[in-house]
Image 1 (cartoon, rainbow, N blue to C red):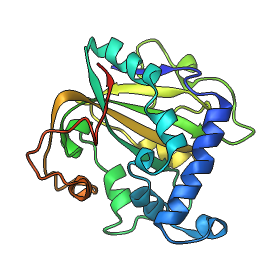
Image 2 (cartoon, rainbow, N blue to C red):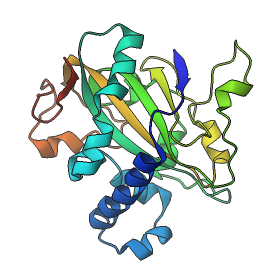
Image 3 (tube, helix red, strand yellow):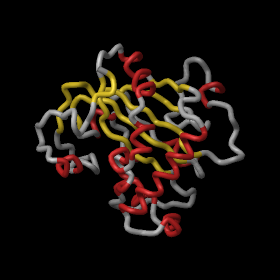
Length: 228
């Protein structure tokens, strides 16, 4: 499935996400907030992995049960744990392809989430629109598509989000037309998920810093259950 839901987050929650995201990124990239605008989308992407671990306000929003419950209901799953979250910055319209750029390589894949994620057992994703231009139309993109046409992964309405199954092919092509927007990907995984090595995952070694080895089951301590 690929389904857009409206009003998942309030404007206040989106503003909180953007503000706290800036705090985390500036700390991780060791630069001032004022200089963050000059950092590349790729740098922001790499530093914008697992934001929830770095900030209690981000954790409160990203791990809220009502977001995970929708995924659980769609999947008819009894339990779900957090996989990871990932900031998806918009690409400037003038950005040229850069060889070996991890962000553009990630966006250029057409594989499913299962195929590019180092969590064996990831079952779904949610891409939230957390920043939209002030003059953006407040009409959900899904409302102007035909009934047989799947919505874009990237809603144009602040606070809306698109849920999708982890085995469906990803299509990031619409992001190029989303200048001025910012998105957050949240992934959900099964209770019995396992950490594995995926060469096409730019963050494949990230969980080793938490003490995991490849082949380890995800723990409640580092990947808490949200639905149980």
